[in-house]
Image (spheres, rainbow, N blue to C red):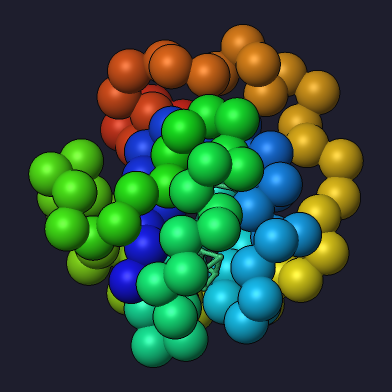
Length: 104
Ligand code: SF4
Ligand code: F3S
């Protein structure tokens, strides 16, 4: 499966949602995750993310995010239509330690 990683937090651009053919994104308050049970590994979302937050689970960058996506995809609701991203999304692009400092 593909995996949403740390740089999605507070960027949450949601371009990924519009291209996924199987609607497998799930929405948290500050980021999205991918349901690994539904992702068909098409890879279409990967280049669409302006924050470059989406990687295949085979990528070293996926690391603990594979488990994170699996866990939160069970808790968060489906999102199928992108809305307006947060107004300060660009400010958070590339910020370090987002999980620790900005997840909630
Ligand atoms: Fe959806 Fe394809 Fe991305 Fe998986 S890889 S989340 S199926 S767009
Ligand atoms: Fe997040 Fe990128 Fe989608 S920032 S919401 S994974 S387009």
